[in-house]
Image 1 (cartoon, one colour):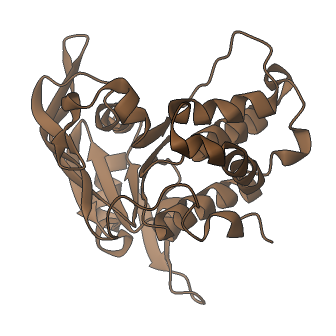
Image 2: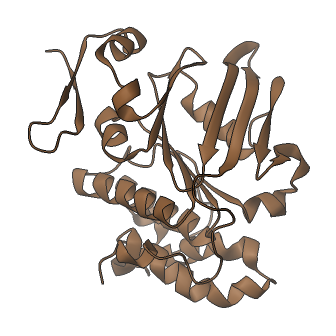
Length: 276
């Protein structure tokens, strides 16, 4: 079995909460202020089951802040976020943990946990529920999908940056929620594992889950995302398919650098290149 095949079928434990194509998470005119500065300004964005949504934009555009707001980890100055039709603040922390899993950029652990311990932490929200019987199955599947099974007994603190990133991803996959939120999951990874992570995101979406991922690599966004949201100085500059959104004019303006966009001569996929 391929390491990706593990997640191609809906997980045994919990079926998708809604049908593909349905709205599961949305921001409605949200503003977020940090240090007296509006980091997000009037952002409205839908997140749909069965799709990968990529958040892209230059440094400081508000991508990570938007992901944190959608996860319920950043306070809003204005606007509202809904998760499965309910205002986000109506959900208790335990209820949120059963519905959305969040991979942050940095994962710090104070104790000498091994890799298996860390991945098993993803199942903590399901303890004392009937779904806990699937813990071993889902942990094993998550480790296989992220290519970390081979060093399950190693201490997390002794891993390389890329290995830590993959273990952290395995933890949120094991959490097995309807919404998967990933903040720059490919930043520390080599080319093979960057592709693997986005393939895992695609296969998770294929099961009816919604995936929101912050990316700096526009070609990964173009190759794997169903929808792309481009952020510019805290505002939503564009939202749509990669073909519609990733244009030379828009990207050159947003990134303040000349960018060429073309179709790959063999696959026809969108390719984004800086002018050199």
